[in-house]
Length: 122
Image 1 (tube, rainbow, N blue to C red):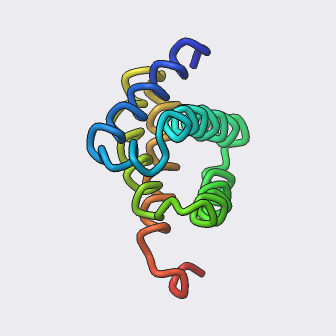
Image 2: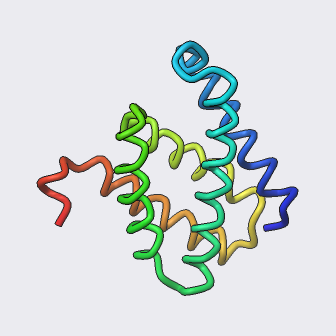
């Protein structure tokens, strides 16, 4: 993905999240919106790294770490899952088929894991 594509994906994802959850404006404001865009850049960077390493597990490990960080900042796991599901819808429009399929697999694995109660994740 080009930097322009990443920015477009990150912004579309953040816009969709804040449209679906307008209360986020009250909770986190403009700063939270900017962080959501930035976080999506990180998600895309990690997806690209997983692709380069041919390791979906590296993205799943990132998702688990991310959950720990964001939950400590009062961001619910459900919002992370929602974000990843939105990426599943958007990413294929900006990637080559093989890369996109790989990234969708990473996102899907992360979503399925995050949907499990923590005591059932091992």
